[in-house]
Length: 141
Image (cartoon, rainbow, N blue to C red; front, side):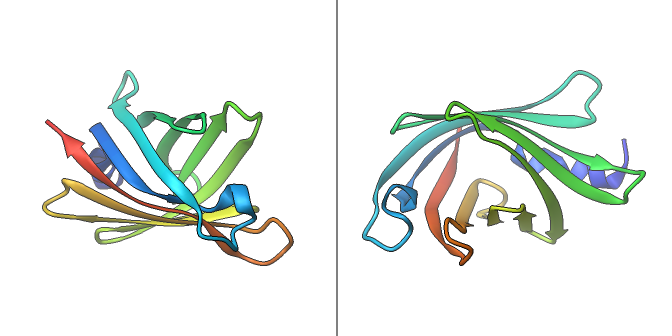
């Protein structure tokens, strides 16, 4: 396992998140409460992380996170119950992971010795970046 693959372990485990979702109002309003649970585990072989997230709304997403040695970069693919499929280029700078896609982007910052994830997601419904959701996920023991 490479150092890049080992770094993915910070995502593993069971998580509970709370925050605010703005996507339903086009990103310009006060938003609505967000609550979700998600779990992340190694796929067999320990090369890729599989994440399964369930949120109010309803919102369900399944994603894969990994290191592509041929391209020399992290990536994420996700599908959700509204029919969207997304691909993100992922960059890591210490405890900060940045996800960049065509229609969405995010910053996930780990703190509290890897027990807390702070998410800030944006989307561009009309070509301009707008808030999509902000949430804090805490590791569940």
